[in-house]
Length: 212
View (tube, one colour):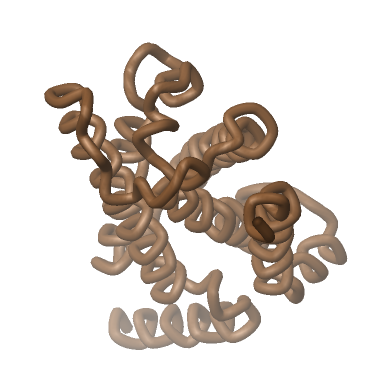
């Protein structure tokens, strides 16, 4: 009886998985969290180390000081780089660690409640909004790019978009079925468009520098 119930549950779960976009399924989404979280955490950690080195030695040349327009060291000197009174990358180190941990928990086979997914959604949404603001500041106020910052930005786009769609697909965020199906079908296209839009904005904003 118990074995029959267990098999029936697995068959039902398989059918549900078959109707779910591949990226939003348990295993693939765990890997997505691990990938975006690990890359984002590494870039944030490098920025923290570079910032510490700059504190110790004001003349420190960071590993991404390429020229006057691509320079982490110059970005460090702006008020936007420490918006809350401490280096912004510290937020990334903590936040991406949570993303990585969530991925590991999912890979272990655990099922997380709606409250957790909504909490993660709130945190990632706030992080994405912060990243968009930093991107706008880099382009239109600071006018200097930071390579490691851009890596973090590149990871936040798919993390935010795919997490949001995952929560729509699984019903954590309520929306009409047609809307859910539409965004699920176009998930990777939306991610790609955000990357293209970000790259294009950088290219055209810094075009005078590129053609010198």
